Image (tube, rainbow, N blue to C red):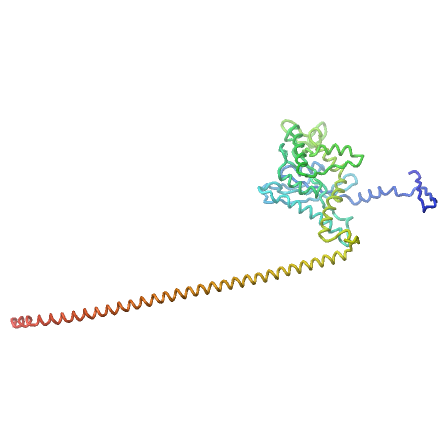
Length: 431
């Protein structure tokens, strides 16, 4: 390096001090590179798409390896998230700790109301884990395994018509949390004219619904032109394959059909190479920085506000952690007192309500008792009247009976008197 002249003005008297020679701070970039290479890099990809749309196959094609991903059923009752971390990826002297997060059962349910919630909870949980590590007294961020999502590949079914409602709802909820890169999966199933119209339709619908997708940065002059051109290819139409065939004396990943062969890395067949260049080779670090500086900072700001932190007080004084904790404690005590008062008032209201109910029940019982007493008195009166009537009938019957018996006795006596002479004459004749 040529000699560097550094001039520094001291005070206002015009005196200058000249330093010459090699200072050595030009090695800072090399130091950062060596430190980063020794540490390794974390990169996490979230793949969102329906079951069987080709997420695992595309990941195998992107990194030219075979990840052991287990197939799943279409009959799952809900959506879940499955994360697989691969720590043995090595290229030259650079190590990459790659985490592929897959959505299991996404889009397979009839009722898709809660399909997006597990994804939001997973992304927020990774942000929360990193935030808790930052808030520790003894932090270890240099060795911390960063599991925050750096890139989200959203797989769109190649229908050729428009986006589904689930696609729009999901991307709308996630665009402020992750870098969304839409891709058209299995792009070899539709023709090129239909694919071009389909891509235009997708970008138009995303813009109309206010969905923000990741845009490759154009502020760096070295890649500005290329990134601007690649932004126009969104969404990328991709094809993945695990099979290798020989084409032109070379083994390439391809899909063989009766009518021909679709090469995965042939730019005339699909946008796979463009996606790989933009995602891995050119903009991987920008995806990591965007995740940390934009999405994580937004989550961090909201969480710290919820916890009561602020940059300054109302009178522009710095906020001390002790003051924040004391204020949170006071607010918590006020909330607990208010909650206790509400519970006490609720208890009093319940007691009053129960007393009113018991009083009303007692009045009802008294009313029923009075009614029963009246009914009993009426029934007793009717019974007494009935008994008197029966007694009168019995007395009348006894009188009639006595009269009849007297008449019968008189009749028998009369008959006996009349038959006595006849019986005497019969006895004399027999003698």
